[in-house]
Length: 307
Image (cartoon, rainbow, N blue to C red; front, side, top):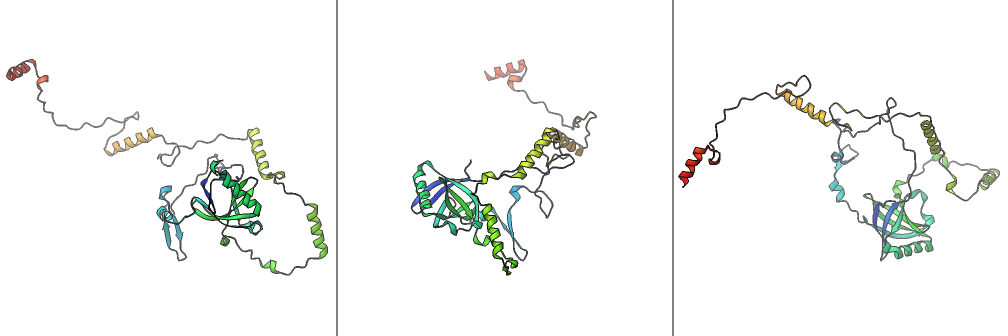
C-alpha cells in the first residue's frame, strides 16, 4: 500500500507520528465507452460554454454562482489563504461512547501506521481506546478539506474513519411514517420467528458479488470463442492538432509548402520543394588581400619596406 498522508496524532501532550493508508478499495471489472461501429474509445474534452473552444487544466479555475446569478471566480491564491490549521495533525478533541456515533455519519476508512519510533505511544493510544470502549473524535485536513473523523481500534491497528458534518445528513421526511398502523401480536410473533430462523453470526466472506462474477464469465466466454476485435488505432488528424499521433515530418512539409506558396513559389511535380527563386544581388567588391594572401612580389616588397 502507498501512504496518502503523513502527519501526527495529537493525543494530549503525546504526539504520535503516523502515515495514512486507504483501508478499502472497491473492485470492479473495468469497462470503457467505445464506438460500437469501430471500437474507438469515446473521449471527453473540456470545452468552454461561451466560445466553444477546448481549454487546458491551467486555464481552469473554480467558480461559485450566487443566488442572483453573479459569478465569483476563486484562484489558487485564494485557496492558499484559507485556514487549514490541522493540515499535518490529527487533533483529538474528545472521547465518546462508540454507540453514540450514528453509523450514517461514518464515511471512508483509513489505517494509521505508526513510525518506528512511535510504536509505544501508538500502543498507548490503542490500549486507551480499547479499555474505555470509546472512539476518539478528531479533526483532520485531507485533500485540502477539513473534516471530522473518529479513531477506533480494529485488531491491532487504529483506524481513522471520516464523518459527515451534521448538516450533510438529510432528514427522513416521509409523512407516510406518521400514519397510525396497527400490528397484530400474531403478525409480530411471525416476523420474530422469521428473524430467529435467519439468525447468524455475520461473516461477510460468505457473500459474493454475483453480478461481477457473471460479467467476468461473460467476457471470458467471448475471449474463448474468438468474439474479439483488434484495438483500433486513431488516425492522425489532417491538421495535426488534438490527435494522439502526429506525423511531424508531414506537418513540417505542409508548413514549408504553405510558406513558399505565399511567396509565389510552386512545389515540384514529384512533391519535393522547388528551389527558391534567385534574388538579384549586388556585385561583390574584391577584398584587398592581406599580406599573407598577396602574390609573391607583393610580399617581398612588404618585407623590404618593413626592413
